[in-house]
Length: 309
Image (cartoon, rainbow, N blue to C red):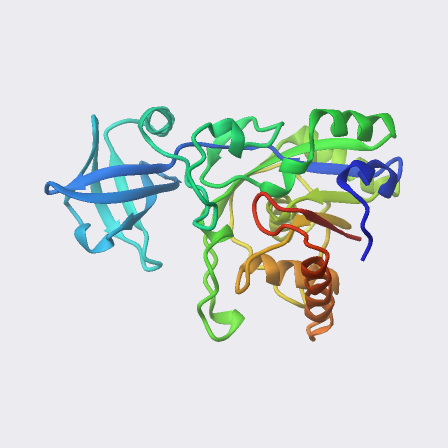
């Protein structure tokens, strides 16, 4: 395990490689609501047709047909989804729901972050562009404008895709077997230009470097649906990467250190030993985590990163 810093990333990569960023942007998705005059906390996950997929606490207060009020925003519960979420139809289109949430809502930071993040810029990547995430793609926190310039100066391509991070990213695995865990769908957009640039990088012998697990899921989730070189795509992806997964696009992964019993830790273990179903990848990652603990590395959203290649 090397102690190189993030400033060394350009030297750790090769000219002709392609760094792929997830340019999603977080919005204030946590809302204080009332149902029949009683308080309920909502977490907006993603639009779903003419409604939204929402988590609620306490969920027992929501039932089909009931009215949910968030200040001037009014919604009606359409259905209870099997995974425990809710479909709520609000009285305005998705872009106006997001605009209103950004006025009255709070930033849905993970529970292990002590204190609230009041300025949403503190929970965005430097290159965040497309609004729609309930959580930041935190490996991207390490990439400053200066570092991106250094990557380009070394002849490394920088490509953007979008995956709006949903509840699936941070929902813990509670099932006894990985096969029983249900992964939530997330919205992905890969433009024709981005797909063409990634294909060109691969054709020229360059490596595809995913900045974060969300970028990796976007690329591999779309590739899994396409029996061809990577093509443009806009829509939902539902991908739970476990040991034995065959990676088609990503060669190198920059990622933070993740929570126990998380799908992200399973993904990293699979990437550490691609195509193998045994414990080799998991054992390698756990050894790296033990070394990180000994060296005092920081874990989770605002922590340090590791480069797998």
